[in-house]
Length: 288
Ligand code: ADP
Ligand code: MG
Image (cartoon, rainbow, N blue to C red; front, side, top):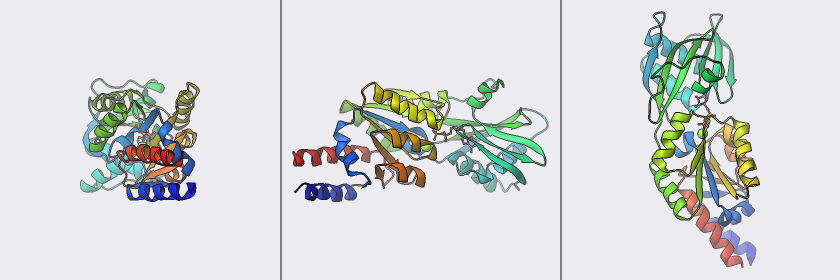
């Protein structure tokens, strides 16, 4: 009878937006006491629009900054890259030829444009390399700033805005009502993370975390006795999804995340995590 009951629940789950890849994990959903969410593409839409372009010198116009940024991002699939390229296209900018493109994981990208090295990087990268972040560069709100460097010199920035998903507000509130701790892990900067955390009323957040650090954060919580679910969409979330007691992928996310996760939220709605907790509990009750 046990497999039958599980099957019924699995079907119910499927009807409610949950694709179960690992039944044991599904049944363990009742044990969750801490849920970690990735920020970009999970708690937020992950669709960036360009809000502003700033040039720091006389050598490059705003248009030049955007053109260089978009040229650099041509081979990146990051949501930031998609936002920048979309803006350059709508402005009908001709992109420049790049070579030696490389991703700097969780920090940005670099490539050569007519033999000069250009980079598009996070504020964390600037701090790490002792490049001064210009005053007022980091605007309060759901913004992500990408800094453009030419041979290591700061020449401009592109400010992008992402939106918090409507249902993120509800899922955080309801999980907290159930006594579950809700925390966020993000590769994005401290200021943006703080904003999103305040907006949603999270219990805690960790910003500027690189992919292997996301995994370490999960391990740390587990060592302190937490039963951890991790929800994410990106390649950078995969190690943490694998490490978590329950790995949950956003359906619209990357294949790597989906293949690593125990459960996939097929509607890409973080709110469906609540259904996971309900149905996981249901299976358990019937089985006892
Ligand atoms: P998240 O955890 O929010 O999904 P990532 O780990 O993918 O974020 O990226 C962390 C940070 O690295 C981004 O917020 C951004 O500042 C920088 N970054 C990553 N990819 C790119 C890119 N293609 N272009 C510019 N900056 C990038
Ligand atoms: Mg993400």
